[in-house]
Amino acid sequence: MGCSRAPRRHTIAGVTTIYLIRHGETPTTGKILPGRTPGLHLSERGRGQAEGVAKQLARVDAVYASPLERARETAAPTCERFRKELLLDDGLLEADFGTWTGKSLVELAKLPEWQVVQKRPEEFRFPGGEPFVEMQERVVGCVRGIAARHPGEVVACFTHADPIKAALAHFTGRGWGAFQQIPAEPCSISELEL
Image (cartoon, rainbow, N blue to C red; front, side):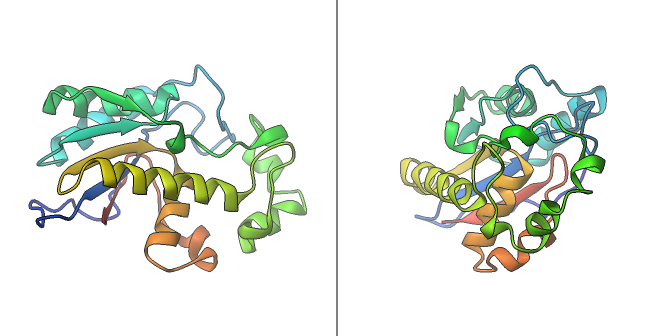
């Protein structure tokens, strides 16, 4: 299980701690671009990763997730451990990859547009889908809204790789140039204080 940074064990008065947690592995992780495809569940390894995340967290006051099954399933052990209801938020959804949804990553990497995705994502709109900049605005707005609803609390948000990378590029001030270098491995935990 990867971890961008070990979760802190304390909070600062008035500061909301947001954990952005990528869902666990699925049978297609690293092979296809699943996007918002329904019915994609965690693999056995992914379920173990989700259990590991729940054990790693010292305190959670609220749990949010993308409505997609893989995010909800990853959140379930954390909800159980901290006895919290799972709150679904469309703002945490994966990017809409449009006609690229379900395509092989190996095949997509052969397209000339793939170089734009890798080097200038802020200029790219997925064919029939969402531009990276709109996805970032959606996720940043969602995270800010969650922080406003939970002042001084610790909130676990279970989501997807690109939304995590977009949020971190924004909140850390690193910008789009760092987007593809920001790690977001399955069940990694990235911490923001807002």
